[in-house]
Image (cartoon, rainbow, N blue to C red; front, side, top):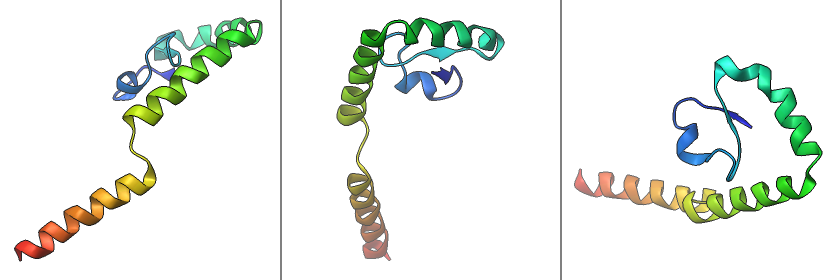
Length: 79
């Protein structure tokens, strides 16, 4: 469950790999939590899709550090 602001909707697809809530709809969060707690299989499915998305689309820390090192090396080589 995440606020539907900024870059969040690029990562969270409502009902697919998480749930987006608009600030003005915060009052609906307790009902959503109750619905999810009454349907553990739904939690598992959404969680599985969220993990698949993260593994496929978001670089690991190691990958991010490697990219940063490459960038720094390019900048240093140009000087």
